[in-house]
Length: 286
Ligand code: SF4
Image (cartoon, rainbow, N blue to C red; front, side, top):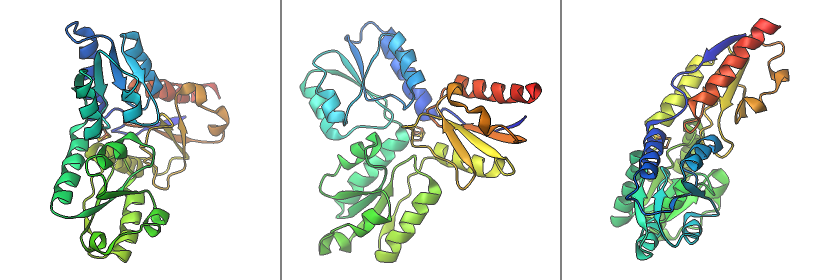
């Protein structure tokens, strides 16, 4: 079977740096114990297992504030998704040693919404409900920002005349650029004066564009990624998502000639390599 290995794929620099930071903290005995990660460092259970083996405890829960409430001592690491100022303040008040692994691209959005709110804008933030990144960004400017995921959310907005007068749009870093453009067009049709800032990060964009350019002509695209990851760079290409090789259904390969394989920004490269090797081998066995 011919395998198109989409490139770039897999870990982005934000994830690589965050994982490296956690490994260093785990190895350095001067950091107070226990060492906790507040939420999943990346949305990938294989990566989390590696950190568990280093003695790092990953705590998960509804939101970052309630996760932090489980911790009374030691070191807390904030993930690449970023956290709200409230979470940082609570951690400091509790005397916890804080390590911030927020990706610089996420910090850009935190700074942006603060600056926009400071000069009187009301912000429509396009992002995924229940994802930690919007939680952190919304927490920067409570009362001056609304989370919208789609056109229905835009229709449901109840903006005051003052909010409507000075509107800005910002976005989560890991969205599909095509879905986001569609929502922005919808917003602009209603609020043509809205100032638009698209903060989809370069790593996400290049991975999405790589799929569109390289998966052309493939019978199927397989995305290796955790179901909680938000990187769905599919753009109309027929695709399935699997967490790892164990979820690969042989039926998908039958009658196919070319399979494209890519990976989410939080997928360890080892998992993708295993899938690629299996599909290449499948050809030799049939
Ligand atoms: S996907 Fe983008 S924003 Fe998120 S960690 Fe990676 S580089 Fe940073």
